Amino acid sequence: MSGHSKWSTIKRKKGAEDAKRGKIFTRIARDIAQSAREGGGDESANPRLKLAIQKAKAANMPKDNVERAVLRGLGKLDGAAEMEETTYEGYGPDGVAYLVETLSDNKNRTLSEIKHTFNRSGGSLASAGSVSWQFEQKGYIALTGDNLEFDEVFMVAAEAGADDVVTEDDVVAVYTPRELFAAVEGALTGAGYEVEDSELRWEAKNETALPVDKAMQNMRLMSDLEDLDDVQSVASNLQITDEVIEAFETA
Image 1: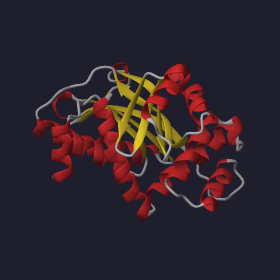
Image 2: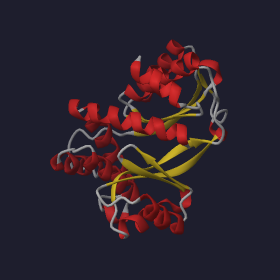
Image 3: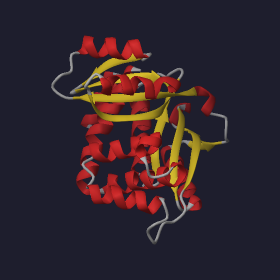
C-alpha cells in the first residue's frame, strides 16, 4: 500500500489548501447531510455520520456548518436537495483503472463533468463492473499527536486485526479489513490515540507500473477528478513510486 500511502500524503496537503478556500467544506457538508438522511442525526448510532463529522473536525470546519448540514439531512432546513450516490468506473491513460465515488443533486451534470475529465486526459468511462473487480474496500485510519510510538501503535492495531501500519510524514496510518474497521478504530481511540482522519476507501488488488511520463498523466487525471465538486473520492490502480511523487510535486 506504499504508493497509495504517498498519494494520501499529497491529498492531505492539497486538502489543507482546499480548506483554506472553503472548497472542502461543501464536499464534507454534503456527506454529513447524506449520512444524516440515511442513518439519522445521532453519530453514536450512525458510523457513517461519525466519520463525516470527524473529517469536518480535521478540516477545521465550523461547528455551525456541521450542525446545519445535519439538520439539512434530517429535512429540518429549507433547500435540502435530494442527493444521490453514484460510483463511476473508467480507464485513464495506458489502461489504468479508476473508481470515482460521487454525491450529487444533479446526476446528469456529474456524469458530463466526469466524462469530460476522462476524455480530456485520453481516458474513457467504462461500463459498470468492468473495473470494480480490481479493487477491494479497506479501512484507513490516520493518527496524529505527540504520543505516537510506532511500535506501540503497531501492537494495538495488529491485535485488533489491522492489515498494515505505516508512517506517513507526521501521521501514522493504519489499514484494516473492511469488516474490522470499526473495531480497530475503537481499539486505537480506546488506547488514547487521536484520530486525524478515518474512512473506508477502495484499494487496488494489483497495481499498474508505468514510466514516469505516463504515470504523471494519470496523476493529473486523479487530481482533476478530485477537484470536481461532486466527487467524494477517487481510487486507481496506478503504482505511485517516489520518482513519480517527486515529478508530480515539482511539475
